[in-house]
Image (tube, rainbow over all chains, first blue to last red; front, side, top):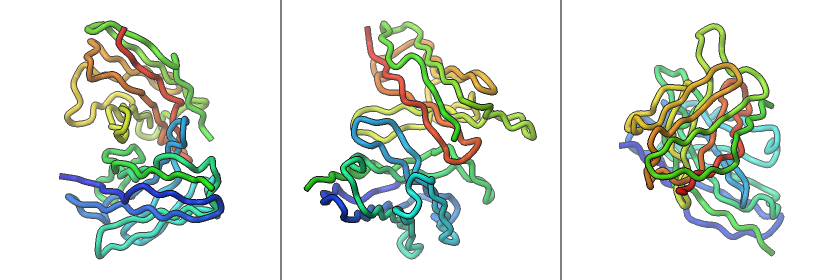
Length: 123
Length: 113
């Protein structure tokens, strides 16, 4: 069955960077886009962007442009999200989520999610 | 960006009773070329990731109980839980995937009365 397993909780200082991993199993990694969604502390869900694991192409929500980078390692079926210049408002839980894709066509509702990674930003 | 607005923010329903959550988008999420509404619903429980319940506004995800149903088109949508069970307590979110950035509603908290 499909699993997305994320890396553990992180504590970072303001201005630092954080890198979260998302290891996929149970399906063909290259066949489904990986999205990143965050829930800042006390807030709702916010989509950050997508990654195409097959070619490494990524798209970012404007709010995060220039501060976030998505990468992947196809040899380990792992996607990564790196967020830089952390602020206190970036504290929260970060999720990877799989797009529902069929025959190379992806729809951006999210059928499987990682368990979430808590990021704490504190001096 | 398409703004998704849910109502109410919270509701308390007795076990076995109906729960209704509304979601309104700031512009239509109906794609005329395929007559599909690009609207999904998720359930989120504390300490767990969101779970996809409904997509295309009314298609139930595999394994989701049939007491969950979605309706609506264009800009106005509804998630209905026909007979609330204790395990349905949580926060429910709508999401549009018609136009990036994909956006979520603010969430509706469902509790037992």
